[in-house]
Amino acid sequence: MRREPPRWAETDGGALPAVLVLVVLLSMLAASVAVGHLGRARVVAQDIHEAEALYAAEAGLTLALARLASDPAWRPAGEPVPLPSSSEAVALSDTAGAPSARETDTPPQVYLRALGGYVEVASVARRGRAEATVTAQVAQRPPEALR
Image 1 (tube, rainbow, N blue to C red):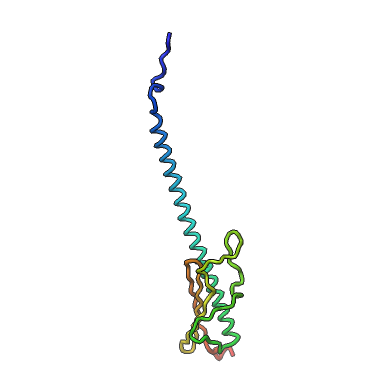
Image 2: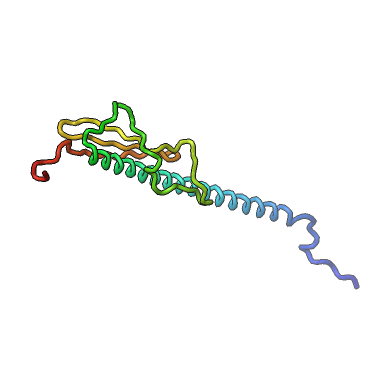
């Protein structure tokens, strides 16, 4: 007596469309996860550049204020004053540990502007696509109480 094969075994290639649909769905899921991670990586990189620019601008402001404290007559001739390379005490580095050398990175630039009895000191720095500006107003002459 001959035995009949099960009914599911009689359909030739019936599983192929189901497997193809499953492969396409899994590929779409993998692609969306990869795109999501790339987007987050860009956001994190921008945050890092913004923090680096802010710290570099603060370093430039600190050095300019120290220069003004040691020489109150120090003034640029209406042009930005590049600070020495030693102004970046901590070398910025990529994750591999090599110093970063992005073309858009600039040392902090200091601008001075007289405002009555005060001097406005501004320091501007760029890191990647981020730019930070830090300003301070300093009295040109110390008040009588501090003399």
